[in-house]
Amino acid sequence: MSDRRFEIDPDIAKASTPPNWVYTDRAVFEASRERIFAKSWQLVGDIEQVRVPGQVYPCTFLEGLLDEPLLLVRDRDDKLRCISNVCTHRGMLVCEHPGVESSLRCRYHGRKFDLNGKFTYMPEFEGTANFPSPKDDLRQVSLAQWGPFVFASLDPETSFDEWFMPLPERLNWLPIKAARFDAARSRDYLVNCNWILYCENYLEGFHIPFVHAGLADGLDFGSYRTELFEHGNVQVGIARGGEPAIVPPPDSIDHGQQVAGYFFWLFPNLMFNVYPWGISVNIVRPVAVDRTRVSFLSYVWDGSKLDTGVGGQLDRVEREDESIVEAVQRGLHSHIYERGRYSPTREQGTHHLHRMLAQRLAVT
Image 1: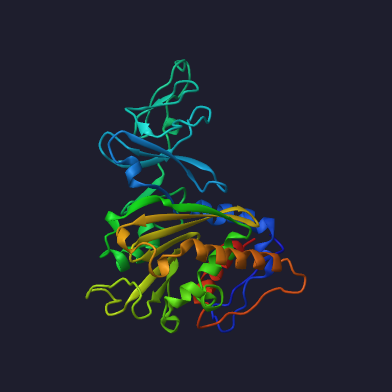
Image 2: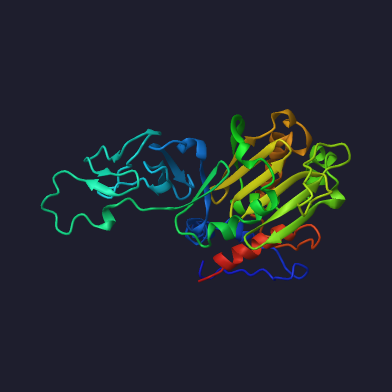
């Protein structure tokens, strides 16, 4: 990457989009692992997976990209923890299956740990000097929770509260804690495009009238708006008259508006789409420079409103988006096209993403 740099003008009216090689260069993709994703917050589990003391749940931080083995644990003091799931002896996975345990024991050579990650015992190590040390404990990993959602970060660039605060500030009046995961309405999509391209498409409503006819029917497109904050943004979709809507209370800044959906994006790859029935969480996981796995996780608090409004046709909207972003990925290999311009009224979110990327990737 030393000879490839890009900048995004902070003035959207003057700015150009990233060069096409940003989406096709393997060096850029590889750089994003450490410069972006290793420092990010990621959704790693559901609180129901570690509900009682002693419950353990193995998970993977960014499967397919970083593949960091982690373990969610509720220890004997009823404290929720996230710890490394790699034995400090020879790198074996400590816990391979969910369950309820009184302690953790590596099945390779018998090293044992308390549920808080503290080393407790190792056979045949009596002659080992300066043993045990803090390095023999399982490392604690930064952890946070909002409603049923559990987040972790290996090396957080920013605090969880700073990164996530716009959601509870806007949405805490909703029944977040009542939302329950619905596996039947959740699925993964494998998309043949760069992860940046998938995110930037999500971040603008500009394409809705052209790509999503069904979605457009439920929205007052003239009132569709994007609001930026430091580590992400939200798109607010206003429902057409008579369409299902979220009705914000008097103390909400959105009081008096019929909200078809809130579409939150948090840098770099997490979306919370809030509808009258609940939340569709989208996790965008880079797999290769031109391959992305997107998880749609449905959390429902009002089943009577499922399959209605703009949140009632998620699979169709996803397939429509896939056809677009996959065609753009092919187009970005062009020897003629290099970079484009932004609509100042409709592409604020995409411009915001590109500025954040340039700050982290355009360094030597």
